[in-house]
Amino acid sequence: MFGFLKDKLKEWVSSAKDKLKTEKVNIESSDLEKSELAAPKKSAKKKGKKTGEKADKLIEKAKKQKIKEAPLEFKPGLQKYEPDVEKIKEEIEEKTLATKEDVKRVQEENEKAQEIASKVEKGEETPEQAVEELEKGHEKTEKGFLKRVGKFFGKKRKIESSDSGESELAIHEFVTPAPEKSSILTKIKSNFIYKITEDDFNELFNDLEMLLLENNVALEVVEDIKDKLSKKLINQEIPKKDLEYEIKKELKSSLNEILIDPDDPVEAIEFKKKEKEPFVILFFGINGTGKTTSIAKFAHLLKSKNYSVVLAAADTFRAASIEQISEHAKRLGIPLIKHDYGADPSAVGFDAIKYAQAHKINVVLIDTAGRMHTKSNLLDEMKKICKVTNPDLKIFVAESIAGNDATEQAKAFHDMIDIDGSILTKADVDEKGGTIISVSHTTHKPIFYLGTGQEYKDLKLFNKQEFIESLGL
Image (cartoon, rainbow, N blue to C red; front, side, top):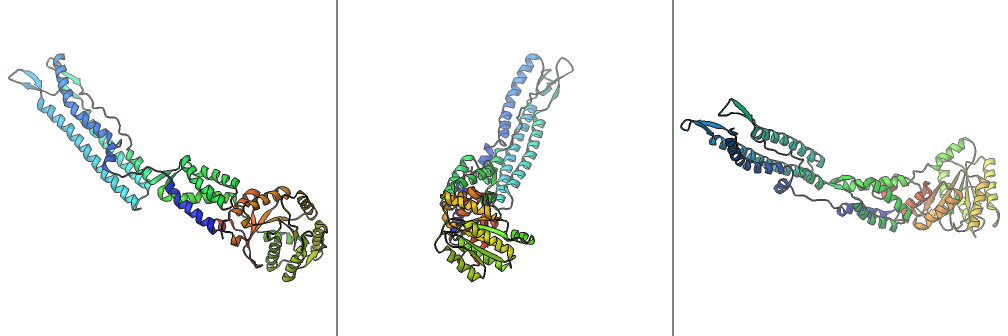
């Protein structure tokens, strides 16, 4: 059953990740160099070169101001202080060394990023663990970098002037902005995680919409599924490896909200049995849907569970209807209450209930005339039967393969008499399954049973989870 819909849903879910667009990234040194992580290092290198030029300018300025703003040494021959050129070169070399260390560190980070990405590809780490590991490494690097900047460019020197004691003057601080978090983290994350945008979702759902409509799911039901799915998927970040699972999970969740798990009618019958009153069930539907056969199947089910049953032939309109149900009653060994053709159907139902009360019979099953949901006079007659018999359950019967027709019928009957649930026949030959979803959604009532064959035993209690699983979800 429902094989066609199952195959189509499987195909749609599998292709969903191919529809989504995400930024692909190859983790190479060029990515690291372009990242914010590398940016401060370039800045350090550049500013390192300028430091020597600044030192010369400071020396000239110091001469004019008679304040020496650079390392000084005493020249005995000249009897005056001159700039210590060797010391200035030494400091510039120190700063250059710091820059080289930063470059080396960037290369090490590059190798580390490639190693982590390789682990993710092999499944040794999750994307979340990879991002966390990179962030930890980045924090350590950031602290070390700032420490070195402070060491080489944040010094203050005390120097002696030629005239007096001491004058405190700082060599201009090397200003480096705090390194921002590397864009490589974002790139790696985007390589393994999808964020489903509204446009992505609409593109995906267009395919699902056509799939559902082709499989007898009513348009209003499709719109409801779209609304439920959009709330669960749009703007959600989903790991690439989990994308197919998450889409299936949310589609399954949406169907769970639409479909209703039925209470077993047999349990309700058992409860009424304790009150020593017959449990009355009315069956409705249009002609040719398998209504009378479904009644016979249900009677067989009850009899197998040791409940006593009486049938009521309240279809006094259709030719041979009484003969048909009489044959079933004879085969099953069940009593039948019937009147002549043209008799009042309500009277037949009333007499069947009185018979059950007199003979302590547990269940009364009333067959009614098939009527089109567009015939208002027949629907009014149906209201009268409900009023006279006061049934415990009103069950609508339709074909599972009828598609949108079954949905329209269910809506009309439900609006008229407020049905309690449905039986869908010919489910064994239904490759689509959309009628089950549509009827349940339209009536907001459960599917009680599915007809799955021609034998009396071929009546299966509907199970919501089994149905969803049969669709491959």
